[in-house]
Length: 195
Image (cartoon, rainbow, N blue to C red; front, side):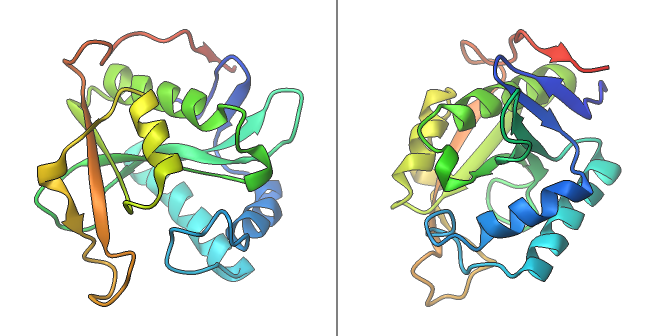
């Protein structure tokens, strides 16, 4: 398995997390626009715990959510990457792709660019057969990214997220999938590794 702690896309650097990312991560996680479709805003301490979880996932699995920075621009604009799904559902075990970007970075195509590279890494370097993504039905922005990176909605696979309370308005999730053997799946991307 090829391990990529850092790699570049056309405009972005995807890399492991550093101590300097935590303040910007905390600000992002306390932004109501960013967290609209997540259960709650996060405190600095909760943000740090989440960053620690991401780093532990890298150490354990060899992959995880990369910190994203704009080359020649902001040093931290959010995260994009792959995670082992941490709950049981009809589609697990599985690896999911996810992202979260600071609201002032929306509208530039960064999520699509970074997520496309993460998919290629998952298929080409990790040898995954399938990658999933999920969100609440109202999160049309994330669903649009899923569709732009070639994921397909699996309406029969929509599910109640088991980590959320039964009365939560965010419990129902839509499921998207992408297999490596569909057109465009498992292809080589133009990726420049950073030495």
